[in-house]
Length: 147
Picture (spheres, helix red, strand yellow):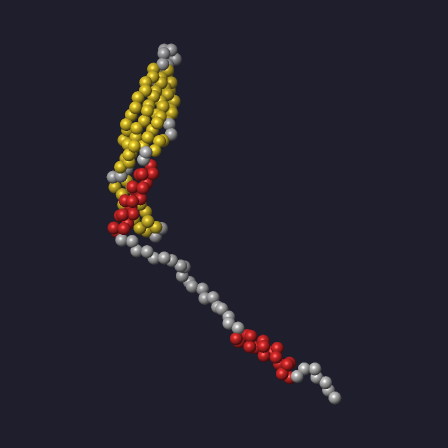
C-alpha cells in the first residue's frame, strides 16, 4: 500500500495561492509626466503699475531717513600742505524718482528706476596745515546737498 501524506487539494493550494496573489494584488504604475509643474498667473497692466508704485514707496520709506557713515579724506594740496576734510552726520532726507517702469520677461518681473535724486544734509569740517606757516586753517559748517 502506498501512503501519501497530503491530499491533491492540499498540494495545489500553494500554487493556486501564488497564482491568485499575482492576479488579484493591485499594482501601482507611476506614469511620469514629461512637463514640469507650473502655476500661471495673469496680472493686468494696472496691477503691475500699482505693485510698482507700492514697491517704490516701500523702498523709499525704508531708506528715508537714514544716516550714512562719516567720510574722512586726507590730501596733499600744492602750496597749502596737508588738508583733512570730514563729512559727518550725513542723513538722507528725501528721495525723488523721476521715471520708473516695470517689464516682464522670461526670468520674472523687472522694476526699472531712473533719474532718482536724494536730498542729503551733513556737517562738514576741514583743516589745512602747511610746513611753511605753523598756524592751521580750519572751518566748519552744515550743508544741504541734492545728488
